[in-house]
Image: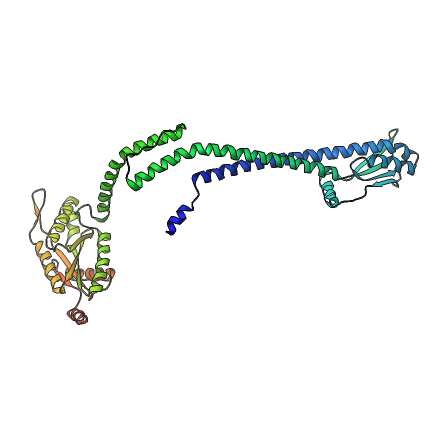
Length: 423
């Protein structure tokens, strides 16, 4: 139920594409708006500074005569006449000795005054200094500081226009994206419906309808063709998977289970034996002098010997016993269930005796081989796969040291008696 609820909360393709397309459109519109805003701000800054220079030049021409005659009253009157009607916050006129001859300052009023000052300092080159010349001789200079009110007005109007354009562009993009997604989503929804029916209901007779979009129509045709072959491929894959699973868990030469398969079965069998207080036995088998056979007769003869050993060992076991090739010339046998470890000894004796008959080779000759067998019983010689394998392996080497072609038991009779008492 939780997994189904999570699946239901997943967004649809239409929603994902819609959000993605709208996000891209908004990003593009936003970047375009930002670029236009930056260009507008730069243009506004250039315009504001040029306008301030023009105002300063006008003030220069107007107060030139007053400065020449050092007439402060006339200079103040001329300065106020121009500065009051232009975007000037502060203007000063100095004579040639650097003395202040005239000064005009616009009074600050309104809550936007601090913002206007900030804009003025950011957009304008403050203050503008310009010499006053008379007959090519400097008679004084002026200092003009711009006002930010006109800059603020232009900036706000420009930003408002850009914002309105961005909103209109976003609405148009959203409208066209909905129409576009409808043409894309319908064919995909039909394709998904047929795919779900084929997967859940095995309805291989359904087909995807045609659509006017070439790529989606081609996709639907390809999917319809796949439906025709689906059943054949499914049967083929099942057969291949069964073959691969067998190859992964069995030895390719002898056809016996491999080490990984054997250890997995041994672990499961040990857990069952522990629950039911049962005996089981592990036989570790090694082919005597196999390296000499390989070196003297060749690997082909060695392979024939291994195949024959595998067949003869399997023939001595019960139907539910397991024999596996661990690698090289080593084999392992799992005997379960057992009444006692003596049953394992009898089977080991049969395995050793089965090799008394020479092995007939394909080339018409024969070769003799023998097996050394180590026996380990649960629970006497170990309670886990590793300890049982080690005990059986050690018992096999004891058999080799005593006399090849024999079996040897790892556990003692006292430990078997202890297990019987516990049972």
